[in-house]
Amino acid sequence: MDDLAERAGHDPIAWRLSILPDPRARACVERVARMCDWQPGASIGTGRGRGIGFARYKNMAGYAAVVAEVEVDENVRVLNVWCAADGGLVINPDGAINQLEGGIIQGISWALKEGVRLDTAGISSRDWESYPVLRFTDVPELFVELINPLTDLPPLGLGEATGGPTVAAIGNA
Image 1 (cartoon, helix red, strand yellow):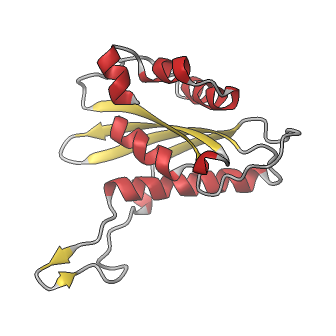
Image 2 (cartoon, rainbow, N blue to C red):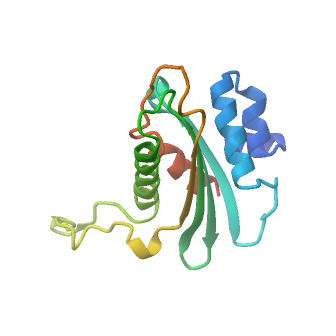
C-alpha cells in the first residue's frame, strides 16, 4: 500500500483512508495516526522514518493498525510503536493490550532478528543460544489503545492481530 501511495504521490495514511470502506478499519487507521501525531513526509531523507501497517486478522477477526518509528544507520532500530486495535467486545482490556504488545515485540523480532541460519553442514541455529531473537534491551516504547473495548459488538479476538502489521510498518518506515 505504501508503495502504491508513493507512486500516486499520496501520504500512505491518506491513501489508505481514501480506499478503506470499512468504518472499523478506518477508525483504527485514524486513531493510530492521531496517537503518533502523523505528519506526512516529516522524516524523508533523515535516516529516521515512520511507516504504517494495517490488517484485519485472518480477514475475519480483530483489526490492528500499527505505526513504527524506525532509525537506520549501520543498524535498523525500532524506536517507538503505536497501535490502535478493534477486537469488538473485550472481556479483559488489560490482557488484550498485553497480547497486542507481545505480538508487536514478536513482529519486531521477526523483522529484525529472527531467521534460520545455515552453514555448510545445514541448519546451524538449533537452540536459543544460536537462534537470534529480540532482546529486552531492544524493545521500543509501545503505545497501544483499544477502540470501544466495552462495545455491544461481538468479540473478534486480537490474539495475533499485530504481528503482520508490525512487520509491514517497519518495512514501510
